[in-house]
Image 1: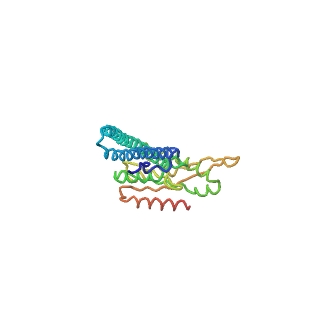
Image 2: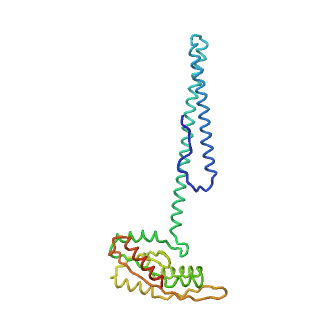
Image 3: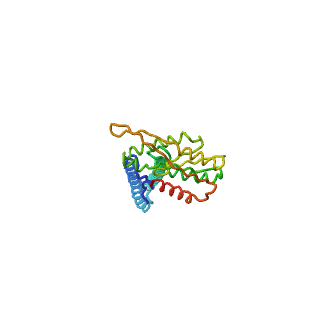
Length: 262
């Protein structure tokens, strides 16, 4: 008779290892109980065979009848207990899988949020761009790259650079329309997926105006406050002219790398 075992595919990062231990204990106990019932059944089968050989005696016939009742009861009890415990373990497995799925979804959601700017990151941006490509000729991707951010990091530290990134993200939000979606692209770059009914020239003018606004965040360096003038460069891509996401991301990355070296 096969042993009952733990549910398969247990999550690697359970919130407590005690659950795994409890499951192992339950499975072991169930196996032991079923084995005990099976051993009793085998012994009663042997007794039944011996009684069968002496079936000519009336009293033994009565004894045999009682033994058969006992044997049948054990068989039914063994089956009942095994089915009951198998159902219990199946329910535990479902609960574990549900917990694992919820943890995985929470982990994926957390991993898509940029910890510096608090915006959705590149993975979410690529999904939004793919959807916008399908929608057609009123969609645009606008890339904004902060100039000389690497120099700010080198001279004033990464904490100051992060401060600049956060403030620039807030700066962009102030200029965007409610339906626009803003993302942290990579390094010093932000990406906006926007829909506009205007001509591309008008959209380009709007984007250049946003990029041309001079931001002057104040950072604390030791005991003094320092104003860090920040400007940005921009790139507009009409998604109606793009059919492949890979081509678009290559252009965005090339522009980001070029501007970041300035």
